[in-house]
Image 1 (tube, each protein chain N blue to C red):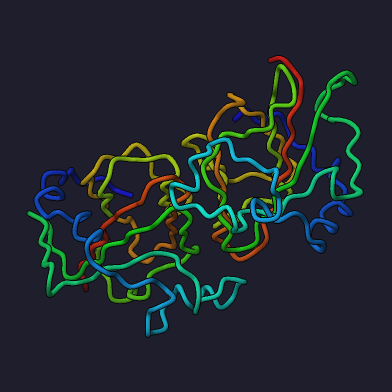
Image 2 (image 1 turned 60 degrees about the vertical axis):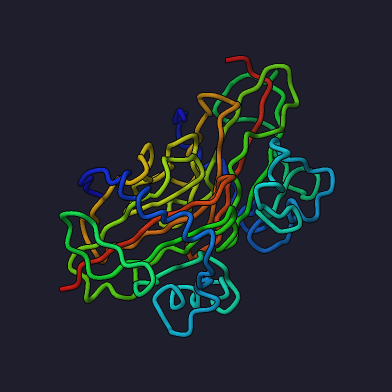
Length: 159
Length: 166
């Protein structure tokens, strides 16, 4: 993961955590109505893609337009993970169309909040730190094995 | 974590076969006396009626472990247990609560080679690249650890608490 800079003030200005805590998201993959790579991964294991509650997603681009200063992005989704939620090792379903993939934690690092890309566990980051995936199709996973909710933002620039 | 060495030849395949093919204690759901070190866990959203791990020990298996191959001392008292996590199981961040002795050393021994999606974190360190039978000693026996199986295959970890004073 390549560190690009800190957008902590931007996170505060957009009240992203407050937005997630006051709006209903989509329980993924349980309530997703399309087949994606997470579901495909789940089908091959003992995870149940039709009942699993891995993360709560928000991609309300119409209601919550987001634009990062000085960074071109075309699409975003927010993730809220309650303690105990975990995504399987996967790559995102839009990998073939993505040129650049970004990841931004919306809180300071909290032990138990995991994001692993390749074999690297992200630690000691700050709220609003922006990271670029070295390879947008890289397999990765996220989970909340800690004691407080975990909030992150994912952004992509399409090809 | 300090890598003591690899003791794969000491691990009996019959142990792994037993652990793989037999059920154990579903913790914390089926283990009423089981107490996680942090009693605040239920207040954080973790459900104590769910299953974080399947536990095996001398209490529910016939597996006999009568010595620690990485030490010549026969005076060391120890207790062992195995955590089995099937894909999708997650084990919360805790400090281990098994304090059986006045002094304590802890060891963590994977029973498989490292696989992507198999997560064991000691403090802020993700354990990767390990081999079956690698013996790691906790640098700090009170450290936070947590685990998850976000992979495709079963995960098996052997744990020891000893009365060594290091």
